[in-house]
Picture (tube, rainbow, N blue to C red):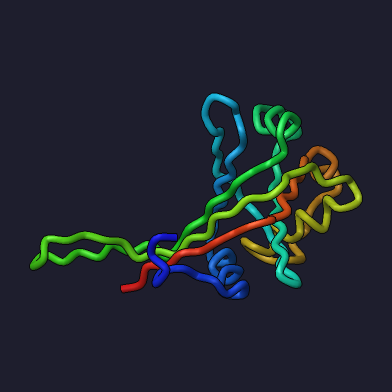
Length: 155
């Protein structure tokens, strides 16, 4: 990282930034160009390990790409605020971001409810009622993070 003064190195600090984010951008290998998509997510962070969960339909481009190559990268950011200095004629941005990579796979039926609860806990509440009939028709993906880094620009 070029700007070491902005690097976030503490694991707990990285996790706190991730908890403040509301969208995770997932990048998959599409051969010619990367395939990137914004997703809602849930997460677990324990013993220095982060696992991200995503939900959606069980078919489509992302599933085809994951079947060919389950390596994935992600990016999330938050805390955006414009910094304008009319006197110096400069413009910058306050932000926090985390980028990383890992392996992504489909969660089996035994883990789906717990993963969906983690997603709902990120946005609303952990005990949000999830109808059983919706669980069966929902695909859940798990990204086990192998590497991540963070960056912050303060005022």
